[in-house]
Length: 294
Image (cartoon, rainbow, N blue to C red; front, side, top):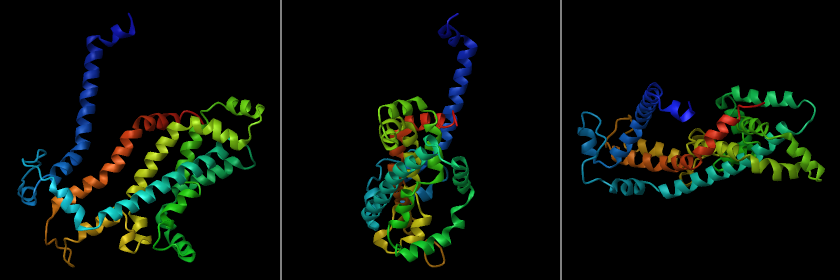
């Protein structure tokens, strides 16, 4: 019996239907908050406050002006520009320097290579909050407080241990015979990195791109510490102030502009969501292959 015939046997088909039904149900559960957020952004404030349950279909007419009204409350165009600059610059630094460090650990041979790689991985167990004070003092001595540099420069000095590990693991799946053939043709280590490794590193780079872009787009901790002037704020930093602007000093909310908060949350969420959807097929492949060897 062929594999196609076995796939259409009643018990196999029933099992597939059950698995797909469970998968769709779990996906709907996880997507429910997003559906509710988009629905709330198209309602009036009174509609949201008067609801006794969750109504995912907003009444007609939909309040599209909520997005314009919320966007004009604060200079969100400036915050969007700042966020894009930080996210894109950090993304470029992580992919470039992270792949270089991973190339050194994955393809080159030098003394204490494995020991140094283990030390690098050990930094993953060190919370960033532990090093925030010495890091802040370092950036303060450099005169980088109230600038974008503390949020960008760390990505240009290796990109982080996680991304080095991710790309190094993927590099181990690339045959070493390609390096040997390139050396025979007179290619230098830098040439091998440029012409052999990078063209074959696509899935790992896409995976690192998604993690890097999303993490820097949503970065709030660093923005709260290093960005003081309002014209330097990022979207997460501005959203925090935007939410708190509706409350009095005692923390009691005077005006429940939930429709504006929902609209801004949707707009802030869209870029990383679209970025993930654009690279999701490479993300799945890279996440699987990085654990195959090494």
